Image (cartoon, rainbow, N blue to C red; front, side, top):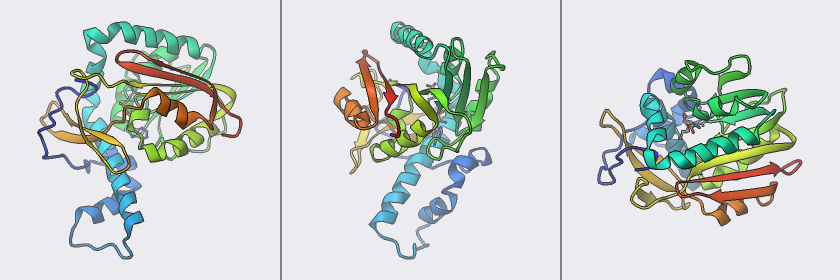
Length: 277
Ligand SMILES: C[S@@+](CC[C@H](N)C(=O)[O-])C[C@H]1O[C@@H](n2cnc3c(N)ncnc32)[C@H](O)[C@@H]1O
């Protein structure tokens, strides 16, 4: 199985987004709409197709946010799979080399697995995630606190920051962004970076028999998996597996020096954002 352990496509009894206050920033933006959506007796005034599409996007993201909050403690098991160790070693080396001396902005850092790697060679790292649950684990690691700051930030609503970073990193994040939102995310991400910055994305390649099966494809061509957690709960999570040509097409207008490498289990994309893109 891929990122999730033991996803069971037969399960259709999906867990709805958690209402725990610890996830409230992520869900807060949309909490009111989600409440309306969850209550069939409430009619949206002026509801139309655009509103429905927005609601669906909000549900997809809110479900993912609460899923990763619930999964925080068991998350790093994905890094223990024996057959993936060679590739992970190679990727760790690439990340360490790519950001030597850089001031790095990392989005969706999770439990800080990659933060710990990048900070070895970087000058500084601002590592961000929407979930306090994963950030708490990241902060508990023996990571150089002089060089690293963990902060709760929504990757889809990046704040204006005084600092411009010379590196941008996101691991296992691209696959969780709806295809229709990728360009908007990338443009906002690039605005946080200085001219000539290095950007690296790493994510999963789909491996038949190893990856969690795709449970459905929606009308926007986004794909989903059913993930099961240790407590038995199941969650439908957006997980896209772009091809090399899709990756290249997505960044075509926005980037130069584009390099894509597909390993067996992972892919790595690196580039320099075009100035102003
Ligand atoms: C697959 S995990 C990757 C974690 C880490 N980058 C790693 O590779 O170990 C995806 C992460 O995205 C975070 N996330 C989900 N929605 C987010 C959002 N809107 N903004 C920032 N982080 C988000 C989750 O909390 C989770 O930690």
